[in-house]
Length: 188
Image (tube, rainbow, N blue to C red; front, side, top):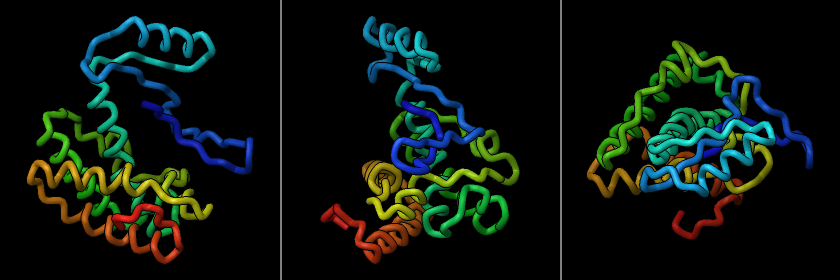
């Protein structure tokens, strides 16, 4: 699971956000620490990349997904970096609501993820980083709707978890993608 906030400035030029963790967390789906994971970790670390090994890779993946869920659609809809969430109380509450719904979905599937909203965003997010979904819209690329939004909806439906905030922002992001001609998925 890659945890690194970046922006493509131009082809071959990548700007790394100063607030990112810059690590490649590795793990097996069954929680074992295999020789191949150890070898991959050692190789990455030998080249200066942090590559911790975890026995709970599913929780790590959900942790990142929930942070993206709480900010990416809001950034995509407002056209603003993550700090927009901290400037407007309504968006801050929407972001918290998205995180709470995502946590409920993960828990319904047996994935224990800490409520990291406060540790990730504090009392008011101020990050100047543009979410990857916003970057996609700005560059006329298909946005990560399935990876960040509809996947959470599918897990929610399977577990019978209500996600009104996720459903609302998903509908709006899909419509924005439709209007921009960025909708390669036939299901939309």
